[in-house]
Image (tube, rainbow, N blue to C red; front, side, top):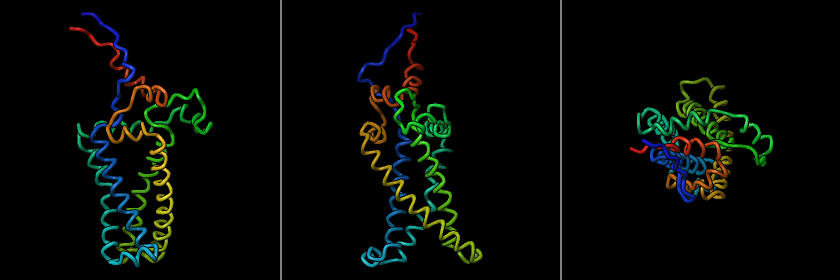
Length: 219
């Protein structure tokens, strides 16, 4: 039995997101776009007048908002199917010295060694998770207002509206950044990235992925 070292080929591709993660991402993206689209129709007068059927739009908005946490919870609880997602949740919640250096240099420090996600992606994930909780809570108070005092309803409306505005801004920024990095976007479409992209942009993650299989015993 001899151990030999296998170096990854120059054009070898690494799996960045498995099928469960890609499915979750696009299901959640669809739900968010429906929530945002219906919100725009409800709050922007000309759109509301053009579309009409306000009660139907409100119903779609409410129940789509309630559905937002469901795909996340199902994937987290789905055993083997959600293993990759659970591992990435751990990564997203782990902050390193390199992450802090990335922030201090506004991403320009050439010696920063990032893992699978950069700090901006970690903040975005935290923001989206928080938005789901806040919008679900405030939206429920607004929908079933009869169970809550007036000051709760007023506060819930204020928070809901301003968080919605922040969400619009973050989603637009997220889409813009995604299109500016075709390799990263492609990994959410097809699941893999080129090793050269990984070495350059996510060196710590690249080493984690390649070192694990660097030595393979020959039978």
